[in-house]
Amino acid sequence: MRRRLAAPILAAVLVALAARAGAAAPPAAPAATSSAAAAAPVLGPRRLDAALGRWVASYGAGRAVLTLDPRLQARLERTLAEAASPYAATVLLDPRTGRILAMAEASRAEPARAGGLALRALSPAASIFKIVTAAALLEEGYTPEEPVCYHGGRHRLDPKLLADDSRRDHACLPLAAAFGHSANVVFAKLADRGLTAERLRGVAERFLFNTPIPFASPVEPSRAVIPADRFGLANAAAGFGEVRLSPLHAALVGAVVANKGVLVPPWTIDLVEGGEVPAAQEPVRVVDERVAEQLGVMMRETVSHGTATRAFARPPRELKGVAVAGKTGSLNERAPFRDHSWFVGYAPAEDPQVVVATVVVNGPLWRVRAPWVAREALAAYFADHLAAAPPTRPHRLARR
Image 1 (cartoon, one colour):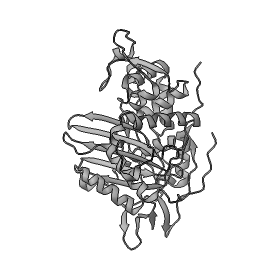
Image 2 (cartoon, helix red, strand yellow):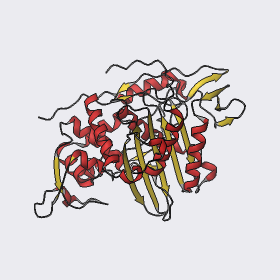
Image 3 (cartoon, one colour):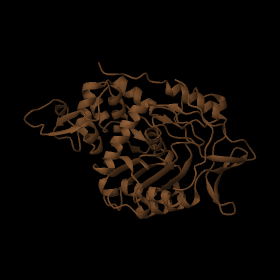
Image 4 (tube, one colour):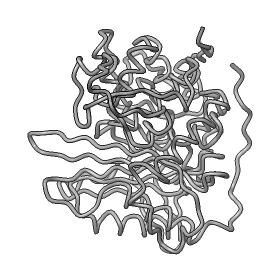
């Protein structure tokens, strides 16, 4: 019998936290949103206050001083501008505290609307969703060493690939290597054998899919459709489903793994001139510590031997000797053609201090993809922050 963890009712918890912290309702919030939450202050457009040397934004009748690091923010914005892609965004945060360190955005397609890209569920989650699927499989008792033999499915899946075929299934990978190499058929087969749509949907909601994310600015919810039919479930589990993801949400998914299974809600307001700072929100356990550790091993496999190896093979000097864990994702859409690439990860892998989430949306011609941008973002962080003691806010782990 495979072991099953009791899932916390995270959606209800986060809605309560949002109301208590005065977080703004996301754009797609239901009409039943409380009047108190609807009237809560929302951050205005941010700007760099040169005299103060900090990023600031209006917040109700006052002015908020933000957690964004000006030097780090500037370097990330330059990196994204040089990529010259239709859309790109990078988020850096401290997984231990939830503090947002940088939130950089750039858009060649809509320059005037670049602000807020990090909070929009613009791109398909693609193989980033394999983090959720892997967590569900591990909770069901699958081990990282459990092999699956398969064939095909590099770019798309077919229902016939779910069945074993001794004549054609010549490639065999354990779950950890399948994660690192983003082997779609392995994830599809395992989900078909060991998960139900209800089970995968429940784990996805714990990872904040289909759930409002409390934050000082409205965050577009990341929608994850998990079909009940056999192939639809397998397709979604492998990263081909109707699942969208915002960069901020992607960073929180990585932070859960980096923080040993605990989500510390994100915050970006250091102080409010002429008002009160929103109350700190309580951490919530998303997955068991053992599951988070196993996911961490898989994410290190991605960088050391998997799909991100090339991007990190010759790191900048700031990353020399720093082990990185991560997950890549990529998916193409047509009409218009868009190449969506992701990297979600953290470093140092053995003692995570920073989480990075990067999405780069390219056209047919492109300069860089997300793993390279994420590498530069991590290098920027370690250039200035490695020896710095992290700011903290008091938190208590919410009980299940």
